[in-house]
Length: 352
Image (cartoon, rainbow, N blue to C red):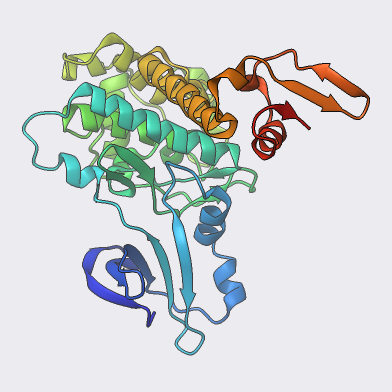
């Protein structure tokens, strides 16, 4: 840690504190997650789920970047040097009298779903998605704090009291640790509503009140769903029927597409709950998908122009193979990376 200078504390949790640091060599600022626990060996450090997850998930535009792991063998102290973001979602909406523009919220939620999709595809689920763990820097959003993450393929049951209560899915509340990656989507739906309304969706005072708050709004689940939960819990539960007030009555300004996505994310039955990949295809994110495709096309065009040099070379290029010369039948936009590298080396006039 000698090459870093502490600037000030950013935050503190049960197991760590976060300090703003400056690299003395390049002058850049970083967020240092200093662990309170002490470790005996580098092997123990490398076996930490958080470090393994960050190494597997990096690099991704919506996952916090891990720059360096600093372990002091003498003292057993451990620090994770990560990129520094401006603030978290909780800090962004705290004390606001008026919600953010919906376009900004949609952009943030699209990025959150992309981070969850990337994570779930790589066999990891977060287990503590909440406003404090979602970081932003201007229009960029990144998911952070992977201290509670688990492998999608690890054996159940898991720890029961995981995730912050207000964002805890029903299967986490009503089973003895029998839940899956779909719990992240429930948490994301709660965050979505909170950004839109500036109020938590299910602010339970305790475990029982948490379930009661959920039932007050979305109603009691059908018997088939409760039966699934009963099969994995020693104690039985019978809830009085509640229709539920509904989310739209609480916040009438929500658009139909927005409301549809929130309901899909806070579906009581995890088997019926939307996945991150499905959420990205929802009509609510239509403009984001179009903008993303347009940006991708633009980047490809810029890349091709840099490689090919002359616009005319896009129209008529030739491919020389071992069998002889033959005309390339498609535009350069369809070429693969190796083709582009060959074009670059030959001035854009032929393929090798």
